[in-house]
Image 1 (cartoon, rainbow, N blue to C red):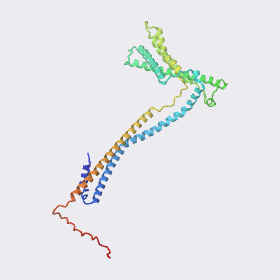
Image 2: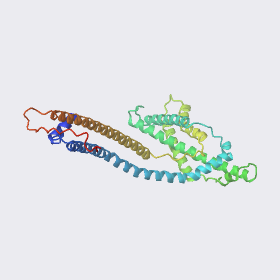
Image 3: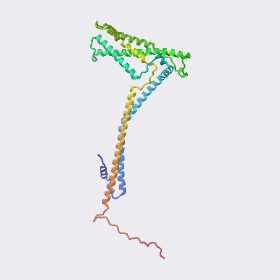
Image 4: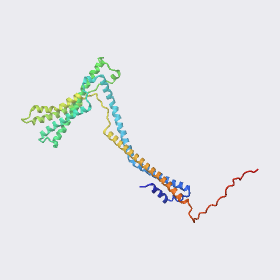
Length: 346
């Protein structure tokens, strides 16, 4: 590793210390050579740091372009969803929840309940398919897993059906509440009244969902009924076949049609934000390393400057005494000045 003495030796090899013992200008030139080398080393440190920052900066620029596109999509979604959110808030203020009787549940409790019901549907349909195909009820059996996936499809269809039925109930309660407000049975602010817009039930989607849900549940019931042995209890078969309806009833009870959640950033946007944080952290680390390297270089050349000053003093001290028999001529002594010169005597 380069140290201060190595730099001084480099100056000696370059001939920068040839006349530093005799001339101050030679000392200044040596100092200039030292400063020039220091500046070159500092530029190398800065160039190396800039080179290391090139890739993270390019990645940040690409991430910024993609984030602009994702933020544009999010703003458009927020703009499209804002009227629905305003209308839902107006219906809440008008008292629609008193008619719907929606329980207040945290989101984690709601998802916990739905996850439990989904696991039940998975098992019921997986067992039905395993019995129909005469295979073992094992998670390593493909047909058993296929039945479980079919159960999840039934569960999703049941959730969709429950929400659509709740939307029908919601639309009916909207009309009744709006009629009460117009007749004066319920008083609301004029700003709230302007945002009370009734919704139309999606009858086509309801019909499709009901048909698909009924076919799937009926298929599972038929399998269990026809594969029922003499030892099986028909009541148990009927009970297991009606389990998918449990998810419909629960979702119909806990679903709040006025809960219009704000659009969240997409998965891609979250990944881009995480990548941006990593790139920024990498840039900060590179900047810190560059500052540390610059400090080491500056400290090294401060030590080199001190070593150069010591070397100059050593060389000057070696030339001050005159050796015997040297060619240097001795300076002639000068006469002492006349102390009375220039004085006017009377």
